[in-house]
Image (cartoon, rainbow, N blue to C red):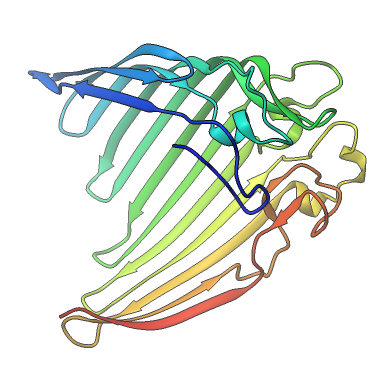
Length: 290
């Protein structure tokens, strides 16, 4: 990659050459399964790096299985983080770390499944953005802990529903900031999906809740509660009147909520630092395959 540019920077100096080789093997020993893997990376700016991974699984019976996994990672800084003339820093070190995970999957009955997972990620040389001098920098070590649960129920041959919750926690780096990267990553996310599937018609309703995202500790009192926790809903419908034809309709942000998935200032909806998601919107169309 060279001469990288974006809408704000017509051309950046600097060239990056990155090669990687990955190999893994899936092995089965009766009820036990093991998948080892290794990745070799060769980066023009950061040299050679070898990372490993392994997943060990066990099948208790036809209804239940569990697994544990260990995976190392290596991320060299992006060209934007290195060479942008305003925000970049060529002194950045690559992010390195490991993720450990354990999970359980079970079928409660013929129509109900349940899964649960726990993970812990530890990283060094985390790359962050320093708002004091507007430069990317290595923010140090970070630990992310999280878990999720998911329940799926089929009520009949056409109608099913899935409920899920994900919890994420990143310890605060000091008393002056909130957990979860100073409150910009939500601690909780709810997902509720209803599905209907027939020969010619299928549709889904998805309801998502992002909760406990207060923003920076210094500005938290100025952030409205309606932006700290946001619920949205989307609808998707498909109808196939004849073979090869699909008539579709999607309605997004049903409740017309003001919200953002990316921001560095929770106080100012729609303003500087707040990248709004679209309001209520829809798309309809026809697809034909022949």
